[in-house]
Image 1 (tube, rainbow, N blue to C red):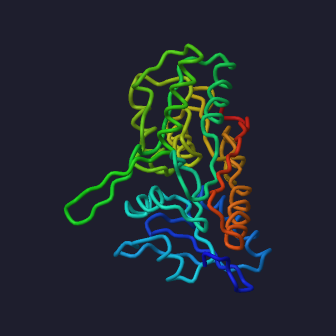
Image 2 (cartoon, helix red, strand yellow):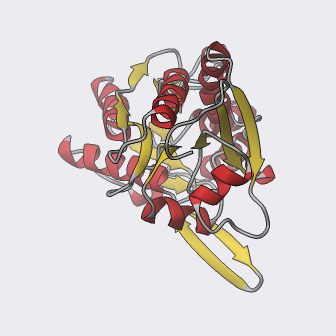
Length: 297
């Protein structure tokens, strides 16, 4: 399809694996809430493609095999090491990835300025007089097992958020306590609850905890409630994403709004343009997040 798609109907593929649960994750559901109606407006077709056990050899192979006009990969660092290598090394105008920006990408990219979001969140806590600030983030890398071999792929989103957190604390001259920076095994509510339960059993509880996403924050809030403590009275909690559950959580979650719906819409628009008029320069679009202050911080 390098010369532009000829069919009257645009066919968009989303590459994933069954383990990633894109139809359950609140992050992915936010993106899909933008992708689906935008694609429908163009009378387009959506194909969800599961990563095969035998990895693809090229990005073109994926598009041709599934007869796609565009390929969207929502969590490209989590699919398979071969996909990571293809995206990092290959220029392709009909492929787009979301977040996890790395230097030199030659595919299309839409991403949030995580630095700005973390800075807003930490600055808000400092303005409230809080100085003992911790972070609960997801894994720093993703492990893939092939036979007896384990390959680790760095998870860029987590690393950017952690680096932004440390950088902001240093710039504000706030002491950094490494015991107050903890990682879950996944970016899930159950992991947020597990890590927070362990944290609450210790004595060194910070005044506030910034979570790497809303799901981790929901889990942290659940653990806090189970121990009879309250947010923000005992510990303030801030999430990241602002998904649909954030305003309805108990108490309503203070979080960094990531414009996932708009990012999903724009991703479709970019791929439709690229399918019709491919060119050599990829589109890299960055979005400014916004802190939404509710009741937990």
